[in-house]
Image (cartoon, rainbow, N blue to C red; front, side, top):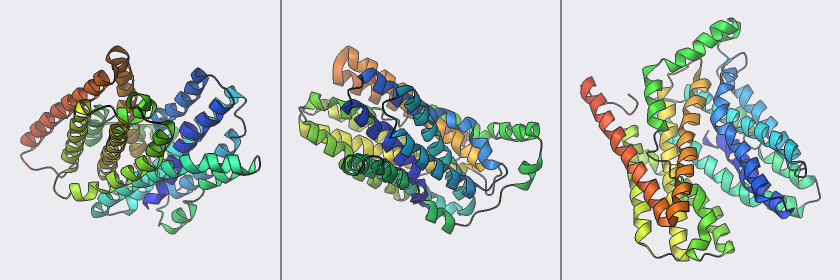
Length: 392
């Protein structure tokens, strides 16, 4: 089931790694490359606006298959359109939206066909598959494009998005909710907004928008290898294979961890450990080995944090909830916001005081967020008078 989440990782590999590689090779200015990449990231925060469609009329399995097919087609087309930057930006946005909507359909669907006991493992494997697909896709896509005849390589990359379709066909799929499919659009919107009124959802929106475990440095360190004297070859190897392995291991460590902690507590523990490891980096010498340690450690811990987010999100969705995909997409979109604003903060700190300032800003803000959320969790549980199960 976790490997049903492959398209989101493959999409990221194409839009965030392969497309920039192709644009750079043809001499496209860095500012234009950054703009195309930013357009791809916009889908991560806006896809929830379209996600309610995934709970209407058709089954979520049908939507998952449609979005996987659409993502594969768009990957093929955009890889052939790198000379037309305006068209490329539109295609990149559409391809990213298809991938995120596939993720929402899969998450909402699987939350309805798994027991509460299975959701810990499912959340971990959804993240492990995401990381694995990104790592394999980033390494494989450029090889296929460079070593196969023109068009055939792009087609092969597009076909990768279709790999999980046999998995979808093997998993039971509840039919679409009959009530939602026959009510008026206004009534449907009323049901969608009712999701936001659920106390659990409102709490998780606040909980996940805080930068307790964002580790934005994991996304910027790959561009700072020169600060450590690391060669381009080493940066590529660590950022590819090293990060993929670290991410898979980090994600799969979460189920054992949350056997001893409530999931929200485990998320804050992961955040605190990640922030402490960032502070430790300040004291280490700026050598290639330290770069490798930082990249692998930051990405492994970040993968664990996102696996915990998956578990929190899956657990927050009531069984057979008619708007499961909507709620899944909303919470996952919010969980990605700290990556955006913390990356901006880390970048500003780097501009003012170099790597040490960036490390300090990232770690101290994360530790502060962990402390605030831990205090709020304690107060919520004290008011309830009972030990919560992880989603309160």
